[in-house]
Image 1 (cartoon, rainbow, N blue to C red):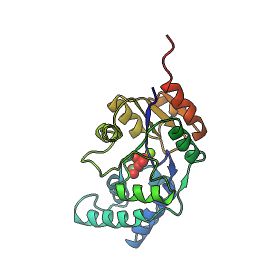
Image 2 (image 1 turned 120 degrees about the vertical axis):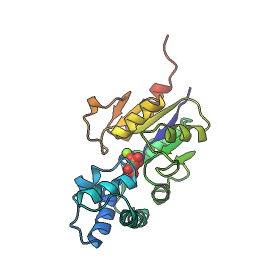
Image 3 (image 1 turned 30 degrees about the vertical axis):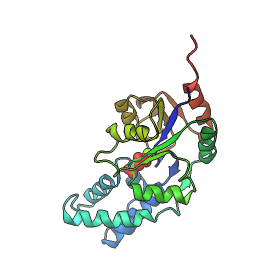
Image 4 (image 1 turned 90 degrees about the horizontal axis):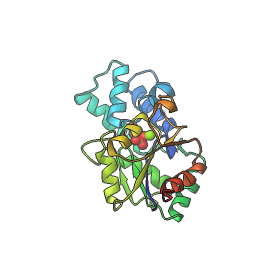
Length: 222
Ligand SMILES: O=C(O)COP(=O)(O)O
Ligand SMILES: [Mg+2]
């Protein structure tokens, strides 16, 4: 039985932290704040843009809710939507997605990144037609690790057996919450050692992905 394969985006298919870092610095330096390091910003990626901006505000002693925060978030989202210049696909990503599709797998995307910058970056890399369903961090009232976005992605893909592929603590928890197998990409933005994150298989290069998915999809040997 061929599985549907649902992907996380930031830190899994694309290395977008340089653009997220640059967008944060564009917004916060305009507010008279000193720039953030890449590590500071990357450490807050994974729970969606409102959480990222709230954590950045907090670390500069600025309000992390209310009208002033809303203005900073709105400005960040504006800058973020046009921020693709520093983003790259992880090596082997395009080939792996195409190989999975050629093997009959349906592909889906379930990210906490807001939908507008998600669609913009998919278009930037010419990947927008590969995915049967795309759910962003603002597509539903809840985000990962709530299982609803992942399950909704699968429903929009027509259901059936599925595997989730992601890079983070949030993704591992989402897969568990949704009851789906989890493949962990080890070169993304996780903060926890691989051994400490629940996963069914781990990989460091996307070349390994079609083989891992095929192993899951193979009928169990009696
Ligand atoms: O925008 C984020 O916080 C992270 O996005 P991701 O779910 O694609 O890793
Ligand atoms: Mg991620």
